[in-house]
Length: 275
Length: 174
Image (cartoon, rainbow over all chains, first blue to last red; front, side, top):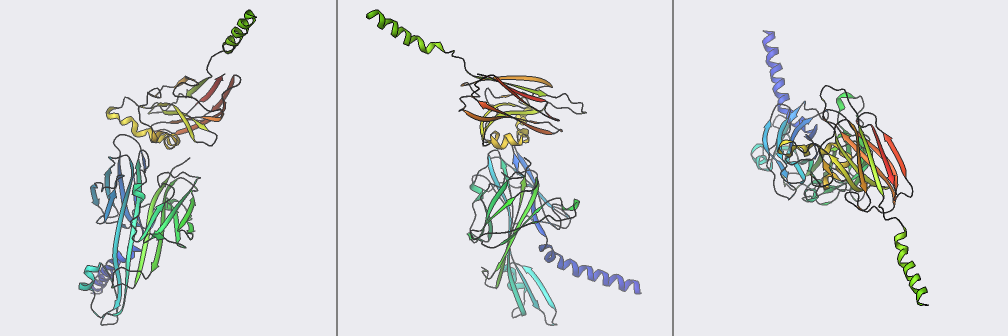
């Protein structure tokens, strides 16, 4: 008797936890990992992993959904995404680099997070879009707090000679306007980048730069930087490898009327080659 | 009077031909080491000249798998990562007078003449000859040999590699 009851309560707890999981997953690191970022040859392809995880760059938590994946070719056109699949811990897709130059791979998600108290005084959390908000969140909910959450996750790959066109920003949300070309990074050298928020320099924003390979060392070795008045930050790469750069801004400039606050985040994976 | 003039004119005319008209020469010897490995592939090698500020001046040679089917040999050019970044990615392969097949273990000598491609006309100054080798399922090594151009006297400099390259020697002849 006791055993069955325990089993049921354990299952209920697991279900409750699973319902919360997608929200918890947001707090983790979202990243794209290309098979290579510097390519030569007449017919280059890249395979890209996309995941949400704790440790970089290991897929051990959730796949990054590819619904809002956009790959831009050097000439500005949309490049084809091929062989896309989403598994348990990662999504994977291929891009055929048919043009010489730099491609931008980006997953841009816009969503709403809400918390409110239900009839029993229980805190409920909701996650969705502006469209589903009206349907799923009760009107006149108690203690309603709505946040617009925009996230942009990017990676850059270059076939042959790097080009600059894809580095142009859209002027919406938190974006990276590289000063140093992201596929021109070498260990020991310094690179500089600029963060823009809605097209304007994002000054005084904290940026975290984390080298991959966390599983095999004790210390995170995170490089903590802050953008200057011009939105610029500079990194001197301590060693070759894949690095994850991330920044987040919170303000009240939500575009969606239901939301009072906006949380705009940006993450990019860059490859630093050895000297 | 007339005779004097004639002699003088002849003397003046003869002057330019007094100096020897031989262009400066650079001999580059690259030693590819004999390696005892299970799966051996001849290395990709690129040889180029850098200025004092490490900017590329000229690519002299690129040895890669030119005969690979579907032209796939160019896929691995980027593994010569310094050369690729400095010059390779701006070039088209094959490049006449520069690219060629990979070479076997042993000593290989290349001769370059001032004013002739691919060396061309190098402005006077301090340079480095750079050799980068990348081997399939193997390693990668880069060597630099500094030299001054044009050579005022015969000069020789060398650099020794540790694993993917043997000795690289640069002999200059004025």
